[in-house]
Each structure stands twice: as structure tokens, then as C-alpha cells.
Length: 246
Ligand code: ASP
Ligand code: MG
Picture 1 (cartoon, rainbow, N blue to C red):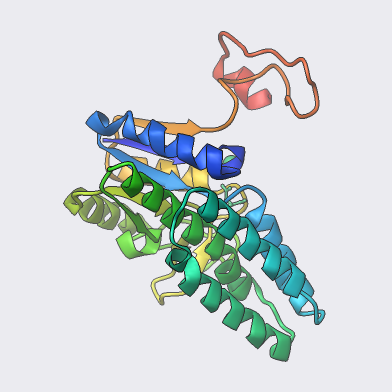
Picture 2 (cartoon, protein in one colour):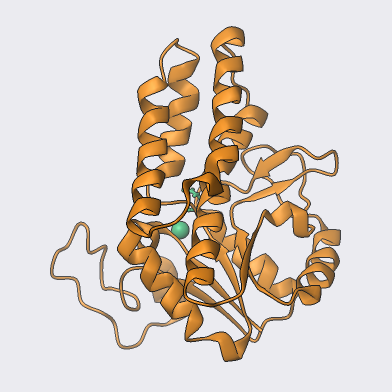
């Protein structure tokens, strides 16, 4: 089994998501377990939503989050009903904040979780469309239990056994939400920004994967951040120390 994690700009739009599904399909012989983050910039928007709603605004942000997902689904000819429950749940949460005007870290984690929850469903649907039997899972439904450090949770030791048992039982390609988990009391947590790579590592460790692949939109490691240095080169070789310095 291998873990394939997709995030950032590699899931920025319909074309990229199509490519992601094709890549997964090409690895079926390795029994892939897919881990995903949210559509590019959606986590930022969800945080912005939480912050602006408590100031009595937020409708525009919510609309733009909806539009980004619906546009992608339309381009992929996927049924919008797939994420309608998530959108409704998110809207209800937002309505409550309009009254309470309070967003604590716990609530902020629940709000952020929708990015991964929606994208996992979209990617699983796209996989099914190209005849790969896939199913979306919220990590916590497969046993990803964490500490109650909202915004910066750590997986509990027992998560490893549960994840292993539950994932090994499946006979579909699981598309699992990165970044999020649940406490033992059933409250949604996040592992901290950028945490879906960490989720992939935890899941890979739990199932003793032969490989954990972190897919992104550039090949290999560049000599500098290509968003800042336009002529950054792909490095042929890099030591661990150099990589960590970069
Ligand atoms: N979607 C989350 C974030 O933007 C997690 C991740 O991308 O790894 O921080
Ligand atoms: Mg990342």
C-alpha cells in the first residue's frame, strides 16, 4: 500500500483535479490510499469567513467558497448534491455565529474542516467517474483521534491501530481528509496549518505503507521558492540538511 497526498495548487481547479484522479488511477496496482487537503486558498477563506461573520459580515465570503466548489464540480460534470450537506452545515454554523458573535478555537477548527471534507468528496466522485471504485472518508470516521489542542492537535497513540484496522478492511480506494481529526469526545480538531502532509505521514505510518508520496504542482525541490525567484532550478540532488535549510 502507498499513501498519495495531494494538496495546495495541485488541487487548484477542475483541470488539476482531473489530473489528480488520473494519477491515482495509474497507481492502482500499488493500492493507493489518497489523502487530500482543501482546494487552494479555501482554508484561508474559511478562516476569513469565521472572522468576518462575528463582525456581522461574511455572506460574500461564504458565497465565494460555494462558487469555487460549484464551478469545479460543474466543469467536472459532477452532481452538486454531493457537497450540499456540507454547505448547509457550514451555513448553519455561520448563522449561529451571527447571533453569538463568538468564534473560539474549537469552532474555528470545525469551520476549517469543511475544506478537506468537500474536496475529498469531489476527488472520490471524479475517481468513480473514471471507473475507479473510490469513497470519501472523514479521517475521524476511520479512527483519526487527536488531543483536544484545537488548532494544533496531535494524533493519539491509539489512532494508529484504529486507522490500520479500518483502512485495511476497505475494498475501495479511500480518499481521506488530511489536516483534521476528532477528540475522543467527538469534537473536530485540526493539526495546524499545512497539516495534511502530517496526516499523510500518520496514515502512512499506521498502515505501514511502502511509500508516502506528497504530490504538489512542481517537480522535485527547487533551488528557491519559484513564486519569488522565477528562474529557480530543480535540484538534481539534495541532502536532508540542505532541504531542511531551504
Ligand atoms: N488545508 C490546510 C491548510 O491550508 C491543510 C493543508 O493544506 O495541508 O492549512
Ligand atoms: Mg502543504
